Image (cartoon, rainbow, N blue to C red):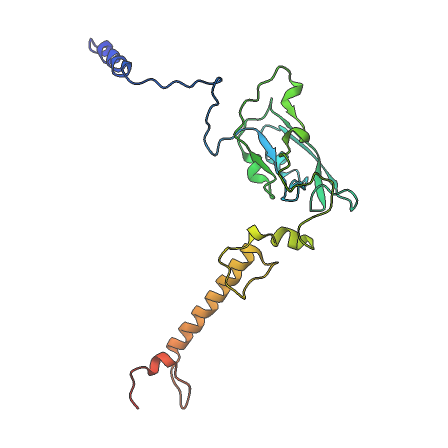
Length: 225
């Protein structure tokens, strides 16, 4: 160690000594987290209150810490909890094991499972850190009805998932709307129509005029009789 090394170390100390300090008043004031913070999980609902979870157990398979336990069950006409064939009858997350990595929400096919900004998960017993389905379900918003009940949006299952207003583009051209098409189907249809128009344009541009054949209009512009 050289003679100037201690001086260099104290230089860092003196450099930061007179900076303005940043103090968080937590827990007196709430801590502000990042928008995509990985906090406590939440089981989401459809706009009519039915649960999005279909009990597929993909989240449990994706969990590297084996912190999720799911039991699926079949819906019945007189007792429906989700719009599909199945729902999550039992849903548990063990926060003694959970590492909040977010792999479970990436595996969910229906966006039923997301992560909130809530991070205060400490408690005074191990049992309280095993969250049940009732602890994870999103609260009912105005207009929602607590399940079980029938689907309240759309006349069919297809219309329920694909015919909601928010699934269609706001600038849908007049006369091209299809209530069962959805945004993804409308984009595919638009892409196909664009490709067909491009092929037709290229074909018209290179096709030669043969003995009495029709000549494209753009080829006759500026041509004298």
